[in-house]
Image 1 (cartoon, rainbow, N blue to C red):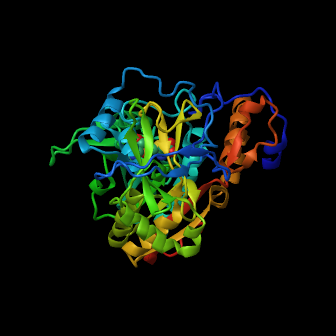
Image 2 (image 1 turned 120 degrees about the vertical axis):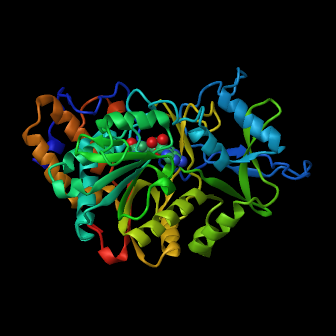
Image 3 (image 1 turned 90 degrees about the horizontal axis):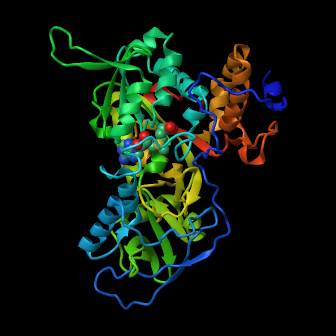
Length: 478
Ligand SMILES: C[S@@+](CC[C@H](N)C(=O)[O-])C[C@H]1O[C@@H](n2cnc3c(N)ncnc32)[C@H](O)[C@@H]1O
């Protein structure tokens, strides 16, 4: 059946009645292949400190992966609130800000950050993610969570934490899929770690939450998802999730949104790439002329990597927020028990120059109209491993393996076959292309529609890593 699914000619059938909306333009998953060829861009050296007359360094930046840059990306126009805010910081500091600070403001500034006030997902938004592609993704993550819960000895009370849940689709599919396994769902308290008030509202709807009055002995109200009758709470940061219970933590496409510092090798050594305002009032990249505080993290990352890996690179990205988050996760798992699952695009080693901007399913210039495009960077899985292992000797790290291996081992083939038994004519096509996008590689061989809409398999591009308390053994399917 599966083979037939992939080989059978395309028909006009489309999915109806599920959460997947057929896109009118080809939806973009956020993975961008890094190109080995690069075009040169001149980046001036910044005048950090009082040294404005230093000669400019010439560095090269990979812009080859960018497409459709707006023709007049920096035309003078009335600045948005966020642009004014960013320029205000640079002016107040008397010098440029790091790419990490720029990225953090662009994504999560409370008033005008990209994620803060709207729904950015799906065909009508800026990009699409795996949970939005197919319900099978959340269901398979649910299978993983239930397996780990069993390995943990089926605790009667447990936190199920999701970091950056977007629209809440993954958790909704997980709970719906797990709802028959009452011992599991009755043990859960779901914690959604989400900084965006707009997305928190969407998550509340996706989980079909109701606000219940408190019990007689307590005045506290609680919110319950009717999908599996589990209590749900929201938090802005992981550290706010209450400790003391074993936890299973899911991070799908969360790490890639954490701010990265970018470094460039120059004649005098590694310099940090910064964002400045040029004389014509446009944003531009400059190089720091002195060591910056983030150099400490660069040194740490280089130490983990070893000489050979670093020697071949002219650019390095480091993500202190990822290192710190991983340490908190490892500490929590060590003290309370449980495990974490990280799924993202990235590589198992030092990341060079991967920061990208996406608006309306197209790659755009990182500095263009900040706040209107998503920024994300490849995840450095080796750094996650080192951070976890350094934080605690009581956790073990597994993977990364490819998403295709992960979903395949957990039984996505059986799930798609089961869904196919009962699908309508319309659902067949969506199941087939969704399955391919999750586990396939490259262009779908069965596609007969327009070239620009061909489903692209991301099964080997996305990687999966688990961090678990050693006392639970090796998690399935690592
Ligand atoms: C790329 S989206 C992924 C959404 C979802 N996991 C999915 O796969 O559809 C990143 C999510 O992380 C949230 N987010 C980004 N940075 C955050 C931060 N620093 N703290 C909390 N949430 C954050 C965003 O609001 C969004 O929900």
